[in-house]
Length: 165
Image (cartoon, rainbow, N blue to C red; front, side):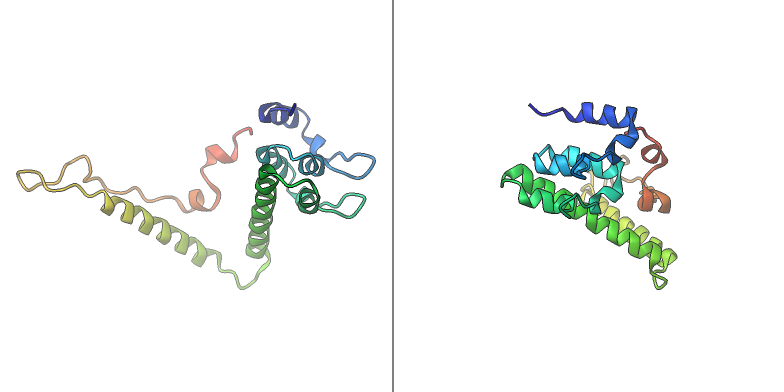
């Protein structure tokens, strides 16, 4: 049987460095999770607990993605590979943002805010109420859309950032 996600989370919370410990064959917990086709949520948890493990190589020179691809085909393996690839893509994008001198943080933040506002405006206009008998709109749906904070868009709310996962 497989260990439940909550158990893995409690173990990592109790001993955070455990995700950095390797076996005698150089495999990190993420390599083992990929090899044994653990729940893809466990793989995501391991990735977020130790982001550098995404590119770590075992004794044979395999990264977690390669270990997953070498394991037997299954629907869970597909989800694991997708999680690993999405994490790699996100990491590469964040690295580009930090290291690319041509990247304009203020401009990107403005674009994110504008696109978020446009999406919300489209959503609100799609739910515009029809006129009532007196020709007025319902008060409930006539509220102003609260503008999101730039920091919430880029990093998420503070409550998420400091929550124990």
